[in-house]
Image (cartoon, rainbow, N blue to C red; front, side, top):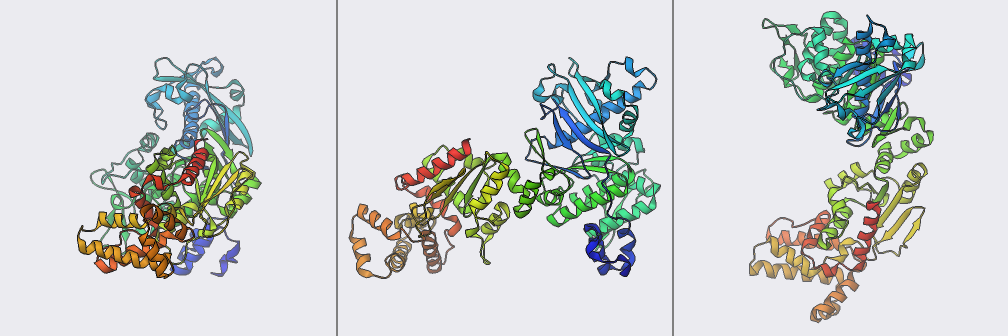
Amino acid sequence: MEELGDKNVLSPLQRCCFAQCQTFGAKQLSFANTLLPSENMKLLHFVEIENFKHYGDTQRIELDHPAVLIGPNNCGKTSALQAIALWSIGLRTWRSESENSKAEQRKGNALNRLSILSVPVPKTRHFWHNLKAGNKDLRITVAVDVHGQPVPVTMIFRHHSSDELVYCEPAKESLAKEEAFRTAASLDVSLLYPMSGISADEAVIKPNRIDFHLGRGNTAEVVRNLCLLVHQQTPTDWAEITDLMRRLFHVRLTEPVENERGAVNLTYEQDGADGELDLSLSGRGFQQMLLIFAHLYSHKGSVLLIDEPDAHLEILRQQQVYVLLRDIAHKNGCQVVIVTHSEVVLREALDRNLTLILAGQAENLAKKTQITNALKHFGAEHYIKARETGHVFYVEGGTDVDMLRAFADKLNHAVKESLDDGSHLNVYYIQDNFPSPDRDLDDELDRVEGGYGLRASAHFHILQSMIPELRGLEIRDNDGKQHKEYTQGGLQIRMWKRYEPENYFITPELLLAWANKHLPNEDLFAKKQQSLLDELILQEVFDGVLEDFENYQKADHSMRKTLWRAQTQSKKLSLFAEEFFRRLAQETGTRMLARKGEMHALVTLCDPSDLNGEVHEKLDALHALLKT
């Protein structure tokens, strides 16, 4: 191990290899030493997209290696990859068909939509932004690397009235840059979509047909052929792929071979299995990574556009995959552009090249030092969600959102639709309610999804320094303290006057109604429910003072409600209700009817008149936050 030197100065991948070598022996050192830290591999420097799909006005996306594009669904991430693929198809087609003619005399080559395999559309007008194909040309500019310098090459696409063809030609100024144009035309650009599973048989096909199927997105039909191609052309490359797959998935790939039926056999060995397993039996993540590795080794010097390479992979492997793609692509002279939803990949890419795309607008986060420094503290996903929604809603935990949703349903409030949808609700769970060591599953999900860690004011103002128009609303429990409501720089702080939201609907009558709904309607159960509830009220609400409890029992219905609100103003009624249901379950031998995090379900049985004006005010404030 001494020849590796100080492992602290190694790249992430080398450190991974170092640890693996300590476990499995020095045999793996040879591969680790082939992946050294290196200068950025840039075949493409940037892309500018105008009037294509999600992109109307010109948007520029920087392309480092690897370039990572993030954003919500249907925002234009995959469209950016397709724009680069369409640029390459148009440019190479024009170059090929112009070789025997005078390029300056050509008026554009016709491309049939069916031949544009990697960018499938039902009609060619679907290439144009908002389907407005007759109004404006579609322009895609990609800066290629010429002697270390970016040189823009622009392709112009015009619509044909048949909706089956587009005409493409280079811009005149691009055609005049002969060396850059030749470089661009010689680039091998491929777009890989996520795999959807493979069949048990795959016929041997020629290399040009492999690229044809890849262009159509039929990746599952050629993964074995790509592996066979690598093995036949460079056996040492295949050995590296098998080493990578063993490191990631703890299996050993066998050598791909052509069988007597003219198909490709490819199997793997796995601990515990009695024999070799066919590739079709492996998981989707396994197949996806094998496809990507095989493509990088069989298409050296290429640009690989990958739509969600981390699909079907758990968190640890998502991080490994980003590091491996970066280093292996560079080793093979390739550049990768990645679309991802992975927060793990997002954090890895923040220092290098990370572009946020929202509704066809691109923002290079990695170039904004203020943003990157702030986001390292609590995660770039918080900035992205705030940019996407324009707001942050602060509560103590996920049950608070459930409670507000239940209130909105019961009152048929205008905010109900937004809460039911949930896709446009950006929630952050504040630090005061950080889960305890004995947290339940709901708390764990809150921790993962919302990112506990900062007080609302600190979290909001960090984000607002980057997004000036950001709006925020915090609704917090009273917790028996005298908190004040206020507004500070776009952040509204609203407090429940009672201890917590549950205090606005939990009453003895409601608890009995919930029990009667879920337990057999028998006198024995009814008497047991009432006696347990009376005992608990005496202990927890009236602190064991029998005289006060008896006066409460003697009061009429209206006075009882008033006394209940007064006595429970500073009580945590969610715990009171949970304790009642716990005692009831023990006495009757039945299940717990509701736990603390499930009390929102009881709202369905409450009297809407019990949900006073304060509940309406909180829902109004939330509706105002979300509707704008």
